[in-house]
Length: 511
Ligand code: SF4
Figure (cartoon, rainbow, N blue to C red):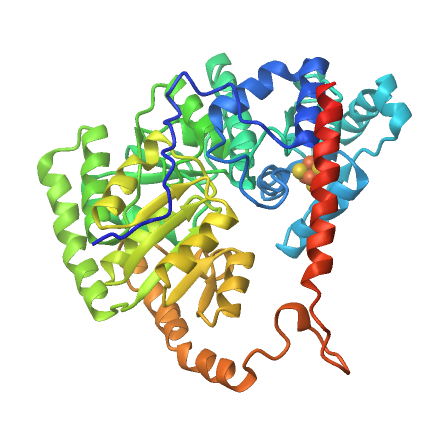
């Protein structure tokens, strides 16, 4: 069935020890990286290289990675989040946080070249942390080093681990070390789990707000649609299991609850640092998720096996929900060819659900890396003829659109923009797909409505295209009194000059 011609560069598994020597960045990032290593950040950058391997190309085009950590901090109760970085980065991150509905202030410790090179910035951060550390208001304070302070080696690890009973978590989240904002969520979640695990080892800790669950629990890993954990709880009920915490958590005490589980469901498979903490606590990990008929059947079986649940109980859960899922899927069919791409880490799950709903999915691109925990979904999708690309770049997503000519493209903003320009209906992954339940019977029919409505838009696109023709496209884009004359020779000359400049710079670097 597959006619794939886009080269697939196989990603190595995270467990491959050959990974870790990194992949070349462009000159700016390389220099930042070298500077950070020279300034004492080698160990943390090497850990990031192992946890979040790059390649086949440098790094996906995504927003500032630090947004992931910032968002995790801002969504936690009784937690203050402080940024240390250039004002322009902090402005952008604060703006994006509030655009996405953060209800907390973002702390900021400003700096200038002098305070950066003299080490005064670290003293300023220390002072800010002491001022903020009010146990009446906070359980934890998170300080995030952005690119410049990381490259300058601002040693957040030297901050006290606790001030007045308030936990202090300092992390480096540079764009040159953490590839995507999705993985930056793991940087903070992993650091918090490590802290909480050490607290558990040291003595008794706070119980969950709603009290301890009487049944063995499943911790869920990954940000999900709010109804999804409740649906998963229903699926687990016949197996006499319950849903515990969802990581990233919404408050500190949930971290203890997360660790105190029987098994971890790595719903989003890229939480490598968090998984390391769960494994250190002896918790088994199960990949994939209860999406669609086969996904739900397999996930329940895997969770059952990991928790030594009897075959009868696993069968009871499957028999209770699988017929309903099948019914919903067949009642809400999706007909059409769909490309899926995104940077959230749930792209493979969405593609599975689309295929089970009847759609033809030929391409799935994810900005996240391939891990052991995405293996089952990868194999399932490839068996259905889909090409799956991890660490997919925008160029790969666009090439896949040109190659497979889908009836609908699901993707990031530039993918959607390119699709609409090519008269292909398109949907934003983050705003429209992630904002729906995916799990169990609730997820089975939830995509059909929005997808089928979008598929029906093709006629409108065709009509618009026929009406406007090529007016205002390419070099003539915009509103003009006279249509501008294209000057390919000028462009060729500029390109020639640029190439000459780059060659000259490279030659100078070799000298
Ligand atoms: S990647 Fe680095 S330089 Fe870019 S916005 Fe984020 S912190 Fe600033």
